[in-house]
Image 1 (spheres, rainbow, N blue to C red):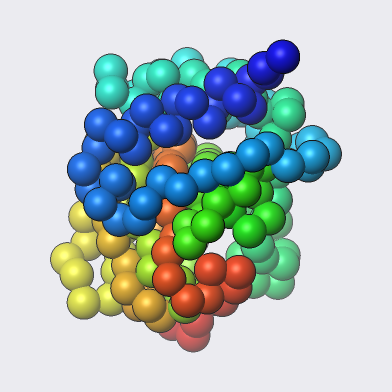
Image 2: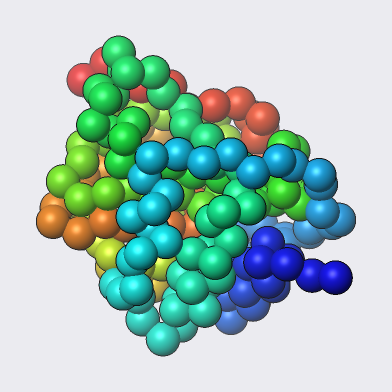
Length: 194
Ligand code: ZN
């Protein structure tokens, strides 16, 4: 029997397959499902209700994420001291595939991340290399060494090891597929001084 998480995994696999920036970033070497209990967050209901902001190529994954929300093991990285209560009430992520995700994966960590409107995600950094891919909505990316850019569905941004980056949402939420590769795969992002 398959459920919404299996369907989500198929939708993510399809999107990676048709998106060269993602399929080239890391081999989509994913394995069996793990038994990971659902865990919810305050922002999940806003994502479930969000029927928009995508493009035809990203709509299947957007809709598959919404359908899988109640089964997903939602998490947060930061404390209220680091990012403030409104940020914590309006953001969340879960690991679809990777060392601790819903599906086993080697050499790859794949996250689904959601941020509500009008949020500032402060400068942070991590060891693993990363690519953000926008599924729906939009967000401004501020990455050390790169021009600031408002990214829309289908756009992506690569971050190298320890490259500092920040993100701002302006008026719209943003739903992203984020991939990590390389050393530090099991590490976490740390807020860095401004
Ligand atoms: Zn990052």
